[in-house]
Image (cartoon, rainbow, N blue to C red):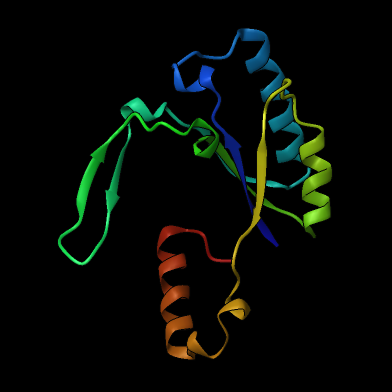
Length: 139
């Protein structure tokens, strides 16, 4: 199963504070373990929302909202994409991450074809497969 690992923002990350060399080294070592175990498919840090935009959709034309955004506990400052056997395995790996006190990280299983049921017709599945092959993420 694939899981998205969402690292929640803090007041420090939203202020644009960058990690120390020691923190970067610790995270690099952790990422190396994930890659060597075949777990990590992708991972990146994100700029603070002062450099972000949201596009809101409603009955009228979409509208743009420039950051920063107020609710820090609802924001994401980084992510990983992992391939694991179970949510329990992902949880075990996450407990080894070098985060400090106050950090919150969310694990979210990614939907699979089976989750969509009959609405995901063979034609739509074939389209999805073609797109995955074009971007190089075919399973």
